[in-house]
Length: 253
Length: 308
Image (tube, rainbow over all chains, first blue to last red):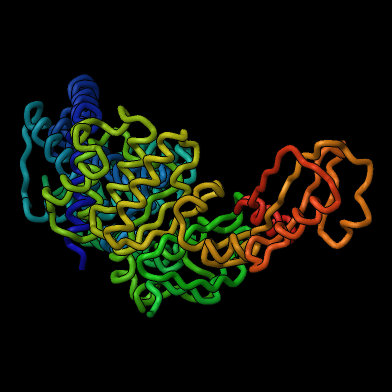
C-alpha cells in the first residue's frame, strides 16, 4: 500500500478546497440559508408542523442531503476529471500507485469536503431552527455512507465524462429534481397514493428519509430499508469502479 | 549486461482500431541516451506511455530492470521518471508544491533537501514560490523535469523535450540532459528534430508506422549510411563529363560549373585522392572544393520515405 501517495492526493485535493473557500464552502452555506429563509420562514409559517416537527426543522435533514449529494458528486467528479482535462493525470497514471489508492485519495477528499460542508450547514441550520438529533450515531453513519457513496459515484462520472457538459449533467440536472421530489421539503404521506408509489422509485427518498429518522424518528420508509438502499448503491458504485479499473476504461485505454 | 528496459513484441491497437504499435522489440542499455526519431503519429508516445504504465498494451511485454510493467508496476514505475510532451501542469500550484506532490505520489516521504537540490540544478530555485502559470514555457518544461526527478528515477523519458522551444532553450535543455547522463540516469528522448538526436544521443532508433525501422549506434549509423559528397567548382564550365573520368562516381552540376563526386565516408582507401590526381593529369582545373557529409536528417528522410 502506497500510503504516501494516498496522503499526497488527499492533501492536494483538500488544499484546493482551501484555495477556493468562497466557492466550495461559503456558497453552499449561503444557498442553504436562503432555503431556510424562503421555505422555512415564508412557507413554514403557513405549514406549522409536519408529523409533529416544526417545518424548518423538518426540512433540515433534506437540505443537508441536497448539499451533500451535490457537493460529493461535484467534488468526486472534478477531482479526477480536472487532471484528465489538463493532462496532469499522466503523473498519477505513471506513478507506482494502484487505482484503489488513487480512488482512496480522491474519494476520501471529496467525501471529507462533503462532510465538512454538511456539518457547517447543520450548524447554520441550528441558528434558524431547533434541531434535535435522536440518534447521533446513526446520523453520522448515514452522513458518512452517503458522502462516500456519492463521492464514488462522482468519481465514476469524472472518469466517464468527456467534456464539462457531461460532467455537469448529473449534479445539475438529475440530483436536484430527485432531491426536491424525494421528500426533502415534504413528507410523502402528504402526496396522493399514486405519487407516493412513484416516490418509492426515487433513490434519494431513502437517503432523506433515513437521515431524517436519525434526527426526529419520523420516516417515510423503514430506516433499515434506507440503510440497505445506501449499501446497495455503494456496492453498485464499487462494482462499476472495479470494472473500470480492470479494463482501464477511459483512463488507460 | 542486462538491459534496463526490454520491450518484446509490443503491440497496441486503440479502441478505434488504430494500430499504433505493430510488434516493437527494443533493448535499452543502462546509462545511455537513446533518441527515438519518427514523424508525428509514428507511435513514439504510445511506446513511452506503455513503458510508463499510462496505456495498457494490447500484446507483448515490457520489462524494466527485469520486472514486468503490468504485473510488477510498483517496482517498474518507481524506477522511471516521465516528462510529457505537452506542458501539462497545475497552473495554480506553486513550483515547490507541485514538485513535492510528485515525490509523494511516487510513495516517498517528503525530502525538502532533495527538492531544493533538484530545483537548484534546474535553475528554478528562485521561482519555487511562484505559481506555475506565471512561468515562461522553458521554465514550465523544467518544472516538469523537476517533477520527474523528484523521486530520483534511474530512467528518464523525455517526450519531445524541445518541441516548440527556441534555440537557446534547446541548448539549455541539452545541457540538462548531459548533466543527467553524467549522474548515471538512462535517458530516452523522442524527437522529430534530427539535429537533437545528432547532438546528444548515443543510439538512435527510428520509428514509423508503429514499427521500429532501425536501431543503431549513432556513429555507426552515420558511418554506415552516411554518404559524402565532394563538390569541385571548375575553373571552366563543362558541357559533358570527359570519357577519361568514367570510372569515378561523378556527376556534373546542372549549369556545368561544378563536378559532384559521391562517396562513402567509411572507405579505407578513399576515391578522392585518386580523383584529384586524375584531374591534374587531365589538366582540369578547379577553383574551390567542398565536402558535405549527409546528416541524420538525410538518413531519416531516406528511411521513412522508403517505407512510406
